[in-house]
Image 1 (cartoon, helix red, strand yellow):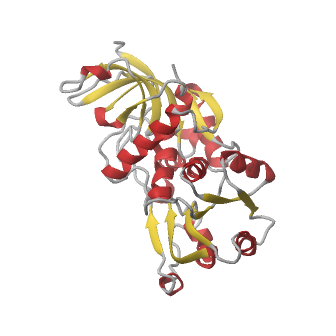
Image 2: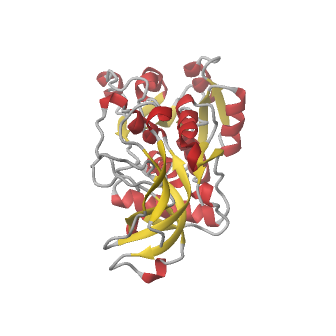
Length: 336
């Protein structure tokens, strides 16, 4: 094993071009219960860019952080207590960095990444590394938003921001499980992507009256569930569109981080509001997501929206692409 590895890191928060560094660091090594993954692809999520930027004045959890929680590669070494069957397995990984609980600072933006063995998942044959790097946050978050309240068979689901990375998987999971999906999007190009993922109807929220359009599509009944990309921005719409005893699952509220909560508007309908954090899924929910994602990948039923691929030394440009939303689909860094 090389003593040093190519990596990207930051030692202070701020704009990508100013704080992200590229060079060599001491190579990661697996400890007890850990595996060492030779990283082939590192997925970038909005949470990665927010943490690097110091969003909401979030303090650095470590003096140096190698970013990105998602990735895919090959297990090349194992620590004490790890099943030897994992050696040389193609895998995808989740929660490589653990910044929210300040327990791990070495993510997948490096040639090698050591992490707990339970956080690597066999990558199915036919799934490329750049695709596997999209499964940790986007796909697992999507699974939780779709299935947190049980089966969706026969239900109508509204997916807000239907061309986003999480939404792309959510549409597929819901459709594969027997639901009808309506997706809101900002452009005709994004409507085409949502439709290709399985959305039966799309609503252009910059042009259409979203409430009226969705009510027309549902015969005035509204929807059983809403998968929400920006709770604070869309809550007024959601209240009008959710059915009695319906469910809203939100995984972000970027535009309005502290939304005003219309208690009685939701309470009179008996609406269940669930907040989903992809880094902190319940163990049973994580296991169910891994099971279903693996099953659908094995059957070749999932589309993976890889919008752009960068090299590791281009990490600042890759982060800027995520922040500026210039890419439709996942932004991935190819390493080995």
